[in-house]
Length: 115
Length: 117
Image 1 (cartoon, rainbow over the protein chains, first blue to last red):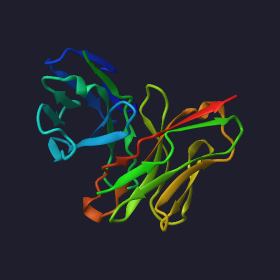
Image 2 (tube, one colour):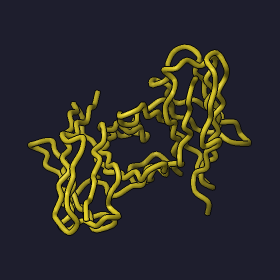
Image 3 (tube, rainbow over the protein chains, first blue to last red):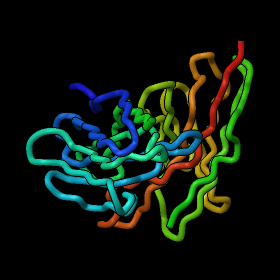
Image 4 (cartoon, each protein chain N blue to C red):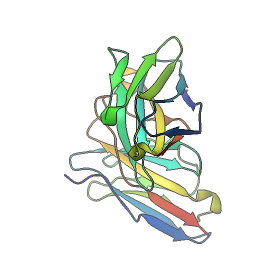
């Protein structure tokens, strides 16, 4: 059973471009969380999705950021018109359910650099 | 809202010495507590978790942690560290509030453990 997959692992964008980050959860997992890790900081929650639904996006910046988790395919975190402050590591995690016994498994992250 | 404070940003220690990484949390509701480890350029791996029951929990790689409700702490300990324990360690909480407890984690700032030979 493959772990959580994220691609690309490294992404370089110039200011104003779009960044698309992909997350394939573990097989059988329908719950996906996105977190952002800024340099020398801990991870900050961004958004929680179930298949085709955004459940909680309280950690997402109001503008330029969006997320989806379609019925088929990976979850996508999209950042439009990137700025230097978007440079960070973006991690997704998946779980099979929401009880506390359902561990969140983390992907290796996408490291976004905005030039 | 919940918050997590890891009191030490860096902890250097010699191989085979004991180590304690400190974590304090603040929450107006009951929480579950977790410790994760992150090796360079990798994702987070769960070390251990406290959900209920015994306040002393044991995890992987010889780590253990003790939940202290009165002091709102969840310190991580290992009696004898190895070079391979060098990594960043994160303490995290999630609220324990029935149907609204869906898994959102609040993390501390992280503690970098460096084990020297």
